Each structure stands twice: as structure tokens, then as C-alpha cells.
Figure 1 (spheres, rainbow, N blue to C red):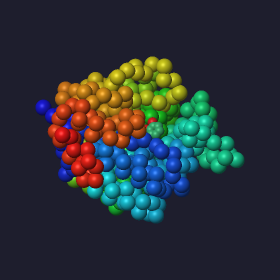
Figure 2 (figure 1 turned 180 degrees about the vertical axis):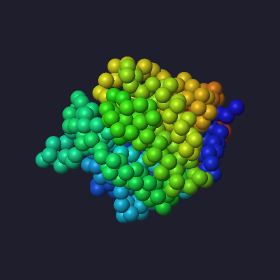
Figure 3 (figure 1 turned 45 degrees about the horizontal axis):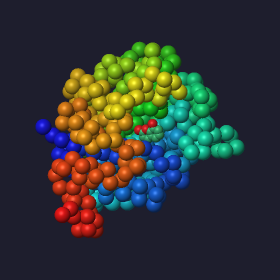
Figure 4 (figure 1 turned 90 degrees about the vertical axis):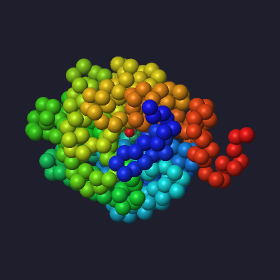
Length: 361
Ligand code: 8CM
């Protein structure tokens, strides 16, 4: 039975342990270019011992950014700084991954610490797009423009181009962001998709954009490298996405070549009142999806204790834990977890520069 510090192989990629840095957002880029901040932020977590480091939600097109400061990969000029990051992560024992994203109707916003609300035209707002011309609401009151078939084809191609650039940059693990109310999730959810054409309505219609985008990316992303999807598997709102529907979607994605499902949840509307928050609350749901769709799974949310993360892996609820806040609080979370669990060789997670000094006597 595998534990948190056993290696994990998916396709031709082997992670040194079952701990990943979840894709987040640093809201610290200019014109989409990652910079020294991103290198140090991500690099520190590789030095801290993570098996997988996923670069933040990276926009496949300028209008797909959440904020003007989000990273992007919409031009060939973006490739070089990502290759720098990928090289460093790999040199320190982590597999370099990246999440490709389009914010849909949640685009054109201030950074969270600057108000977290829609930009105004004089602040440089742009027109968000989405499946239907219905706003997220609350802090994001701007209605998106309903996407035409031409828009849909263009954005799919942006995901494909982004995947090719990520590969050129040396990324070895690709995740598509189909969660948290951003573009793909807003196609999937009946709470955001009110289309009457073939991209809306029935389950088949609502998953069409996701399946087509995934299949197009799989076509260019090498078979030997993992391709995963982060999915909001429940909207926690009556009439929204359910776990049962998500299992059916995961099965269809699997038949298109999905290698792992990254189980997430919620945020397609501002109503979070029914989210069953609690320690590792998504782990039992990840377990159900992992078993019913028969596919490797990653899980996050409110996982901060080493024993809890280890139990999730040992009980086969998930193959990987993806940590966000815990990693922000402690870049050395994997090293500290190895010390706490007294498993393996914690020092082996550290670079030479630190290992010799921190050698446990
Ligand atoms: C950023 C902000 C909010 C989210 C996010 C991110 C980045 C990645 C992700 O989710 O998966 O919900």
C-alpha cells in the first residue's frame, strides 16, 4: 500500500512523492510574463520537496486572464520564462507542470487584495466572454458576451497553442482548468450555461466544449506525458453540477485520453453557503470518482496535516494530494511532513546546500 512518500508514476513521468503544489494565482505578472517572483515562489516549493509543482492558472488568451496581472501563454515570446522555471523545478527534483486556463465570465477583475471586483473601463477593463450573457454576480457584475461558434473554435485553438508552448518550455505535466466557475466550468454548469444550441441544454451539450477542448489538446500533448483536468465536481447548489454528472463526464474524458482527475469543487456562482467545508472534505468524493470512473485522482482542499495527507493516499482515496494554502504557509511542507511521519529520508528531499547542515543526528 502506497503512502505519501512513495513515488508515483503516471505515463512516463515519476513523482518522488505524492505531494503536489496546487496551481494557484500570484497576480504578479506583466503582460502574462512570469518573472523572478514566480521563479522564486515555485522554485522554493521544489527545493522544499514537492513531487509535482504546477505553475499557476495560465491564461491561453489575454481576455482569459482573471486579472491584468495573471500569467499567460498566448504568444511564443512567453515560452522562455516558463522554460527557465521548468528547468529550475526539474533540477531540484520536482516534475514541472502547468495549468492552462480561461477565466470566462470571471475575467477582467482586480487582484484579490485590491478589491477582487470587476475592473471599470478607466481601469483597463476588457469584455469577458462566456457561454451565455449572464454575469457571475456579486463582485463581478459585468455580463460576459455570449460566445459565437467562432469564439468557441478560437478559444479551443488557444488551449491547443498553449499546450504546444508549454511542451516547448519543458513542462512535463499539463492540467486544464475546468473548475471554479471559469470558462469550461461555466459551459458545464446549468447555473451559467443557458445556451439553446449544441453547446448547451442537455448534459451532452453542456460537456461539448470541455470534451472538444480536451480532445484537441490531447492530440498535441504527447501520449507519454500526463494530461489532467481540474474539475469542479459539484456546484453544491440545487440545479447545478452534481457528482453523478461529473463521474459521467470523467468517464467520457477518460475515453478521450484523460490520465488523472484533479477533484475540486464549486464557485460557479457567488453562493458558497452549501459547501460542506471541513478537514479534507473532498477526499471521500475524490475516492468515489476514482473508483467509479476507475481513474487516478488528485485531491485538495483543507489538507494541512501530514498524517491526514498520508491517510488519503494509504486509504486510496486519492493518488496525489495537491496543496495550496499549506504550501504558501510552508514551502518546506514536504520536508517537514517527512520528518513528522518518520518515513523515508527527509534529508533526501533537500538540496545539498541544506542537507549537510540539517542532517538529523
Ligand atoms: C486562482 C484563483 C482562484 C481559483 C484558482 C486559481 C488558480 C488555479 C485554480 O483555481 O485551480 O479558484
